[in-house]
Amino acid sequence: MGVLVITGTGTGVGKTIVTAAVAACALGAGRTAAVLKPAQTGVRRGESGDVDDVRRLVGPVTTRELARYPDPLAPATAAARVGAAGVGTEEIAEAVRELDGDHDTVLVEGAGGLLVRLDTAGGTVADAAGAVAAPVLVVARAGLGTLNDTALTVEALRVRGLACLGVVIGEWRAEPDLAAEHNLRDLPEVAAAPLLGVLPSGAGGLPPEEFRARAPGWLRPELGGTADDPATTVGRLHGAGAAR
Image 1: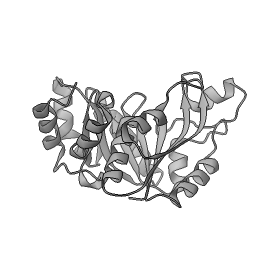
Image 2: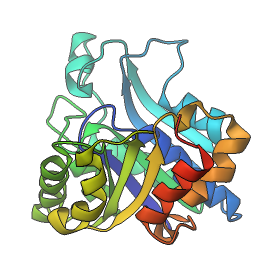
Image 3: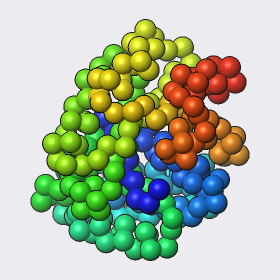
């Protein structure tokens, strides 16, 4: 794996923890890894943000954050509120080129969903993915509404000529409802994209050593994991009591 852009069907679906899990798999395979967060919102200077969570869980991974804004808003809006223009597509592409030259794997974690604006000129996460010519991994939350939201995101990628690597469910509850259970069967068909992993809710709260040990079992080989299929992953989560 070279460069991979990680987006979500919305905010709070577990992008950061999925990013950390992919990075952990890369390091476990003896590869060097870097995580780029173009913009972080809703976090003030000195507070812990997404890249800090990745470092805590993964360990020896390079992290870079291009901008941080205090208001919990879309990056372009949060930037404008402090008189900034936000992070442009070319700035993101240049950062990826620099990291790609020194690392085997570069993960670009977007903010919010695919069409969230990153700068006041209108550049989106999708535009950034196009600028770095990287495939996109979509993170979704299991439950009612996921099929529609995921299908729309994958369709938006295809309309723009961007490759969708697949979908990962980022927040699998210990007691999933009926809709979540059906997502495992229906998501690949409805979204026309493979389901490449399932992470338990609360995975980000695991001790780092446990997180790194379990990450390969949550993801399929396409992402550096070892799980045979998502159903097997879910069985392991329930059987091992990983969901908390």
